[in-house]
Length: 108
Image (tube, rainbow, N blue to C red; front, side, top):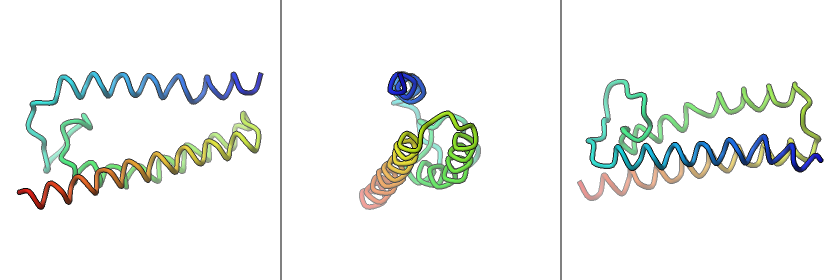
């Protein structure tokens, strides 16, 4: 039963986020990316701004993990999986955006 709870907490929201991002990416693919000023939609940002937003997301992710930890919903093993997923997500997102930012700078 614990594995089903874990799937409900992680997999379903992850699938929703992926679908919404794919839809937004499709609708905003030909729009000019902004490097200055406020932009709500992630897909409208330049890769430099996406990298900065990924770094700003780290404190919020730590806060979310702390709240999840305090709720005592997950077992110790499940908390470790959640921490690993959070860490890998931030590292991949920041690393990919940094790589694309530098690649974009070289071609410009």
